[in-house]
Length: 139
Image (cartoon, rainbow, N blue to C red):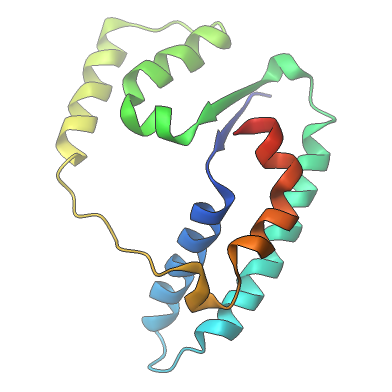
């Protein structure tokens, strides 16, 4: 098995996940309690994340490739090439051409604006407390 683990600021990630949850909940409901949803999402994602961090320790390091989200966003083709190289997968010019085409075709899509974490009832301090070790290790 091979694992590519994307690392992003926990605050931005948590806010993004909650914002996405609010978007999808808004499709089926006219009333959303943002703070309640934020509390539920925060609890769910932090417990899932903590489990993933523990599970990660059981995976041999050579089977894990860590990717910084901002580096990926800046140059997804280079990042994909590095992943292939790390796992000794053949990278072809055709693969690169297709990926470049895809990146170009999606580059002008509108970006979704996220709410702030305070909209969801948690603070930067709440996130920092839960993700301190992760942030120090990977960001």
